[in-house]
Length: 128
Image (tube, rainbow, N blue to C red; front, side, top):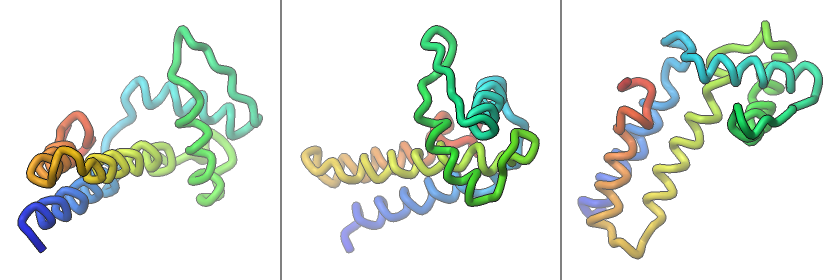
C-alpha cells in the first residue's frame, strides 16, 4: 500500500476512535439537550413538529430512532448519551469516507484532507 493509502487508513481509524469512544464522557451542551428533548417527544409520541425558525430539520431525530429502538429505549428518561450521540458520530465517520471517495483531487490531496477532518477539533468532540 502506498503512503497515501496508509494515511487514509489512519485517518479513518483515528476518526472512528475519536468519534465513537466514550460518547457519555462529557455533559450535553445546550443544542444537544434541546434536540434530546425534541427527540424524546418524537420517541414517546411519534410526532415531530418542525419549526424552521428555531431548530434544525428532522433528519437527526428520525435517524436516532433506530439506535433508540435497538437499545430498547422508549422514553426521554431512558435515553443515554450514547444513543443521542451515535448518529452524529457515524455521520462524522461518513464524512471522512466521503472525502476519501473524492478521486478527482488525487490521493496526495484527499488523504491529508481526510486526516485533517478526522482529527479536527470541531468535528470530533474528544478534542474540544
